[in-house]
Length: 386
Image (cartoon, rainbow, N blue to C red; front, side, top):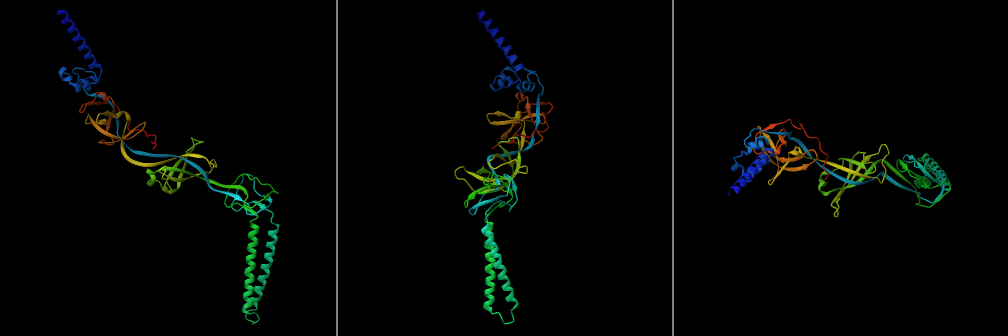
């Protein structure tokens, strides 16, 4: 019997020593014992044990030493990214209006042309003859009309003769315009300034009507078409700025604007078609290139805390705010999480401090000793992509 009693006493002593060591060196031990209702039975003052950071175990008192960070004001970032296809500001497929033999190719391959420049001419001998004939007929009709005008008032010119002369003059003018039109059709001209692609036509070639001659592009600006989700339809408008990164040049970020917004949302994808424009001053962009387009929308203003400050309980997320030298638990709702900050809603104000290190020793109302703050302001985060 005595043997069993000795073994029991030794076991109890070992448990007591282990319990003492646990409470002394594990800051959260006292809180655990308090939750299961054992702390009071053992005579442990939980608040003192926790606030001492494990240096008082069964009766040590003193404020908990914690590291804090300042609560700052920040704005949520709504960012929409989409893949867009680029094309030139204007593109024209040039064709021969009539059939004929090529007599002149007046531009270099891949060269730059101005509006109205002749790119190609067809044989126009017959049209020039017709134009000269029309000019002669116009001169003759004009002389006759002037002669009759001089004879007005003498009684030598009837009203019918005068009308016939004016009709002949008008007919000659129309014939001249028609001859000039037929001559102009023998030339292929640039409808706008731009760059001409490769021309696979040589002098002496016979072209048929509507045969393709060359492609003319104006890539002084590049248009980028992309789609945005329906949730931002009311926030996208012409003139809004955008960022674009060519997929082939991911390190180059271009700034542009929205040129036009479609009026209908696609029923299948629930997206809206948007067209942006990018400057191409150095002529580095081409039609057919793909771009990652980024639209940034201003968000609402909230308070932001260091990610280390956010704790979790069965009731939800919370932070330890330091008010009047004591810890106060403040429940918050997380609105946006980034690598360097968390935007939250709760009873927090900019300029307050929250605990980011030493939270395991805190209880509501516990006194705290402030270590130097981590920083006065949080760094700007990377944008959240929605």
